[in-house]
Image (cartoon, rainbow, N blue to C red; front, top):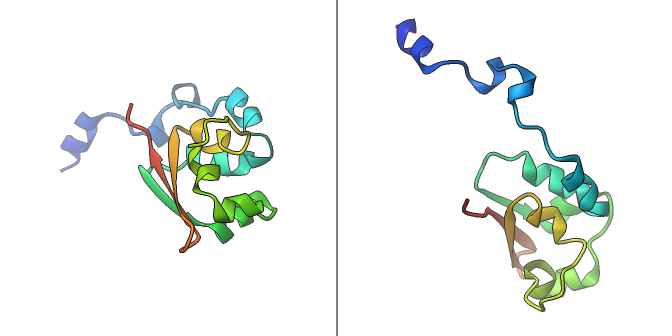
Length: 112
């Protein structure tokens, strides 16, 4: 029974720390005041993460600005202007899809 497990090789928790990819300090710093959101999204294994505005605010420790609650462009960057807040999910290799009525955001992992 255990023979097949040995053939699979070591799992991530059994590998030396040097082999496990650590988050980039540059990315963490570049996320600015939204770095807690970056860290949360970057450490999730799921391809899709759904968070409510309240959960995002709990992670950040401050209230989202008013445009985040009423403008999809704040989340999607459709206005073309790069923004500091969006780096938290773009550096974590995710896209944001807000549902303003439900006050939720779906963060999808970008295809490699």
